[in-house]
Image (cartoon, rainbow, N blue to C red):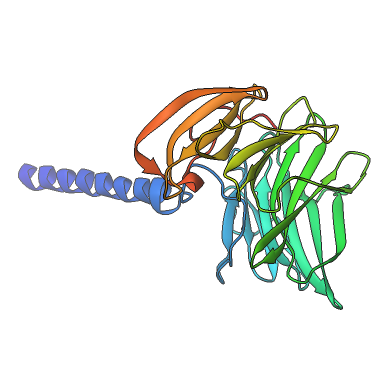
Length: 289
């Protein structure tokens, strides 16, 4: 009898142990985000939608074709549903320091395109701001946004043509002063802004350089003169991180520097890395927005 009881106890303990392993796998791997950082551009969400997690995973936004559903942690029902009404979400990103998201949408009117950049509060706050840019070529879409909560400045990169790629950049601020920003490049990759200064850092994809545009409209190439480079981002201390590329466009090293140039190697990769997989967070740096 004692032998049977002991075997039963062992069986129960083993069963609970393996059940715990299953739950751990579901929580840490199967149900976790695909990567440690958030990809902002939405590319053809499936019928089930594409999920975006807020800074502390308190909220999850699921972007679908017809609506955006926002869920609070541990709830199966959305706390808010935003109907798109024929618009297409082309960009979605949660801010780094608060429960607020930026969502870029595109829609076509009679003969032209229009894009909207909207602030999204999870619980549906009353004062949600939005900027609309009309009279664009059909098919125009917001592909990237750079912002600073210190200066309340937002830059939007809008792709207005696909073949060849052509972009326009617009700037807005707390006073809703929306205007187009003319750059020395038409193919724009990543963008970032410095925290204290209204300075825009961006990729010139055609030339393989990283450029900084100052508030007065002047600009400087901050990447080294030899080689091809791509922007990674800017950290909380306004340090700029750029990637050095090989002939295949893969990152072989990450360099760090300030707006005056003079970059030094921060990290060297023995195996070249995909530039899209490298972020300021992945480098272990803090992003201050």
